[in-house]
Length: 115
Image (cartoon, rainbow, N blue to C red; front, side, top):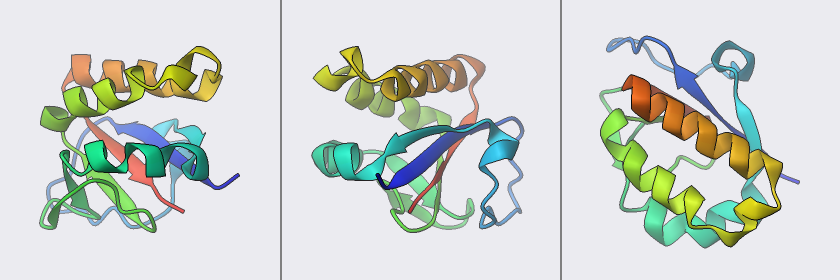
């Protein structure tokens, strides 16, 4: 398993570099990069993100770093996760979907810690 983590940033800091590995700070959910991310890659590439800070716009996920997922990209991410048929058997995917929906409802950024 190659774990990656997703969490919610309670209050985004426009000037902060989110480069420190702090999954506990964001109550992260862990999924297996090897199992899911390759399958999702084409759809993830349609998702606007930031790599490390809000001054580095990009798309998709930084597989070896930190990605910030803005509220406007959460609908795309929600669709990717909810459409994966493995969600019925994988508790971690169910938890990720709950987290995405919570961030979306609260209009908050998500954070992703890559490999």
